[in-house]
Amino acid sequence: MSKRLGIYIHIPFCVSKCSYCDFYSLPGQSRKMPDYQAALLSHISESASNIEPYEVDSVYIGGGT
Image (cartoon, rainbow, N blue to C red; front, side, top):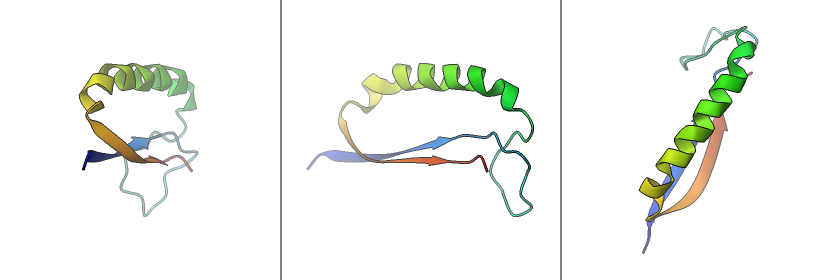
C-alpha cells in the first residue's frame, strides 16, 4: 500500500472577513495575489521531491469568499 497524502491550498484573499471565519485572510488585499501565486508555485516546485513517495489522493482549495 502506498502512503497517501491530502493537500490543502489556502487562498486568503476575501472581499471581506466573515464573522465566523477563523482562517487567515487578507480582505481587500487582492493586489497581493500575483506575489502570493508566485510564492505558492515556488513552494509547490520546491516541495515536489518531498512528496514523491506519496500518492496524492485529494487536493482541497479553500478560502476566499
